[in-house]
Image (cartoon, rainbow, N blue to C red; front, top):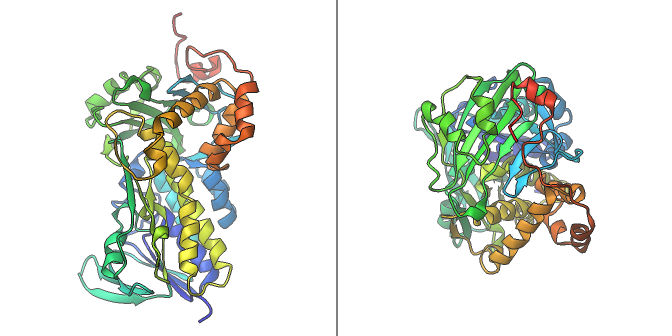
Length: 469
């Protein structure tokens, strides 16, 4: 055999669909194994509880998806998604103060997660080379430490088991992946794992936005300040399709997340600025409160194993999970799909899976270190990582990050570089380059802002009054 012919993808969510599409570009047939029943319209499903909270597809990931599936961005925008230009279309209170709204350089796509998944999924599943086995879960991998040959699956409703054989299996099962246990059962040593757990929890509900606010009013983000050494509290108001706002309130460990409707608005008043509370206090809530504890950062290192079985790959949340507050999960999965696509464009013989896994894993390094290094700065964070960037010297790195954060909110060129990195368009190493260091010293900074940088027209749109001096 000169290359894989049939592929199996475990998991039919965002990462799984992108992986299935990539496999179908190179293989004769693909089977997606999905525990849920996938809806035929933009609806929530049990297997994606995080879908009820705010999401953003950063431009770095959106461009990859557009390369793989041309026209996807236009379809999303036509369905009501908002293209936010950073930082012109964002009003944000960072840990170091209000961010100036500089001219845009990068962007993010915002809509509800069910819409995003459905637009991408319906496009991908139109390919008749892809078959979905719904209400089916993976039980174990078959093969040995040298090669994985298939996966044993179980019908969720009947309990009947079946062996599915494949040339290449991609684990995109997400947070519930059993990969570490399966690999041990095949005779491989334990896969190394790092965990940074800040105890982040989320509470969200949808609101009816004022007329025109989802297209003409900026997104709002009020972040916590880690330097006060108290549990962090966060709040965002994100424009969504159908004239709605997604409002997500969150906290680090000890922040007392609101889980009842009567507690939602009072909690918003406890944020560092009342802007979120002012916005939602005068509009109609459309949904109950949805609460989740999903903020752990967890990363596996399969690429570090001396031996890696041919026929197996892992990407998406099965490989690395990030605190969702930074919005990097979907873009990181897209980077993994791009690495897989590039690898399959070359001869894929013995040893290719290990090389490909290294490339996929390299794509999660930047979002991993960005999320984990920010979270360890918060009080009560439980750091169980061995990554030296998160242990020795972490204080010096945090001091440098604070210096950058303080300048980026007032310096347009510094902000541009930071936004390039945050949007996963440029590597994080750029922030340590000599060019960036020189920029930090020469770029002129604007004055500190003392209140949200909203225009009079924007304030009128949402019925906000000027604040008293």
